[in-house]
Image (cartoon, rainbow, N blue to C red):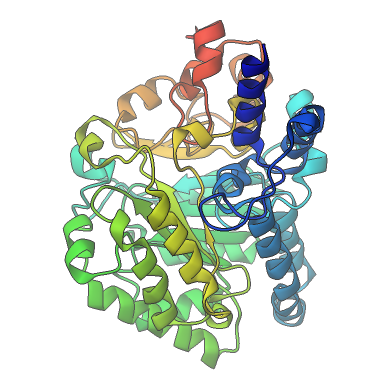
Length: 464
């Protein structure tokens, strides 16, 4: 009996690590005494309530103290951004910024500051979720690269651009929009209307974020991005050396990418603008895991925390795998490399902090805690733009035909309000967070949240 209790306590400890200030292999640990079993369980429940789901894998890697320290530092540093927005962009721009840092449930730039209070209410009563205030729009499926980790390299989808007219028809259906991500499974800057779309979004005082390889962002484009007031850019950069980088991101040039980033920083400094905040996204694979510590050094050689932006950070994330790239998947990270990466990030106060979202499936938060469904993704598929799927977490699975078939509708063919209020979409929102319900088919095998336990116990709802 004693061994059973100890096993149960150990499981709770591994899941929540609420007493950890640093992860056990990276520093000192406060271990719970056997007599504190009830306290561990209680604190575990508190941690689920207080820690936003998107931060959970980082907490399990860095420890709650490490994440809490980063959040406090970022919150303090944001006073520079707030002052800039009030003086140069106005109160509406500040409103969108505060929404991003307090209420955005997932996505680029999300701070989730108010989610410990708002999140449990919405999960319990999904009907409280507002008409979407944040969306993602795919602007092209065209790309001139052959990155080996990207589904675009392995699919048979036609190359299509979203036109400005179509974009305007989509975004105008969200009158209270506060945040938007304009990216997709292609190189957005190949769409001739892309900068026009960004400018139109900013004219509505919407917080604009994008993800890019930075291969095509030359000085001229960088200047326009800063002038337009883009709030954040996540740079997809999966290696610290030229050899590994160009092996993974086929078609990109290491030196050109680094130079383009430096140019953007210089332009920001010349314009005295703390935005866009620049973050890095490093997908961990068997090909580059050994370069994680070196990547921290590379980022520091490019710029400092001040020059990148107040909320800037390095995201080391797990690979969103599918059949064609399974050989690169790393289900468990080497603790020694992770520890060295964390130590490197702390060596210099000007280093960007590191976080670890969506790594190691055993660390995924439960689907019962997901709020990504509040952020619809407008997808291009089969050569047609406008298909509505619940979020971006189901992408990069190389199954566009499946997603198109099971989408909630097409926003260019019927009003989004009708799609959002449809019986199927409403039932989907009511089901996602129900602990004792079947898992919606669209969520099956999610690479951000753990669906397996519910799938095994309650099955799959094929109608959702």
